[in-house]
Length: 165
Image 1 (cartoon, one colour):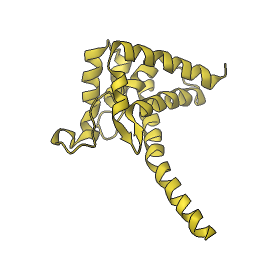
Image 2 (tube, helix red, strand yellow):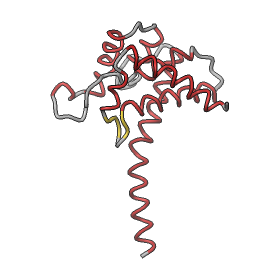
Image 3 (cartoon, one colour):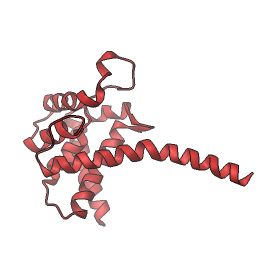
Image 4 (cartoon, helix red, strand yellow):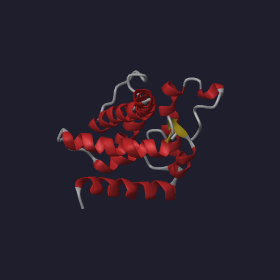
């Protein structure tokens, strides 16, 4: 099995645990960015976090990194709905995610740091663990791709149609 396959096996094994013991499966019902669900986004962030650790040769607690990445957006609601409780989603969802994760699982200090600090600098306290820094960076990379790429593809296809006609 290649490295990418091994990473996905570790992630999929953790997903199975989170779905059996908690409500991780519910994240499939909520859109995060563009047409990407919170479920898909969380998996992409976990994969990108592991890739960054490998690329920069950073030794990490892989289990905590994967679990923290998968639960970093465990807020369990549709933040796109017009609702005053979602008004400041970017600032407050890390604590809502942590509260839900702590209700459903035993959360380690590393996992808590990942979930609580993944929105830095929107949340003012920076991560203290390397795993949380990696998830914070991976989250930004994935969010940007999920938001920009669909729009870029749509514009590019329009440009190609105009150029051909």
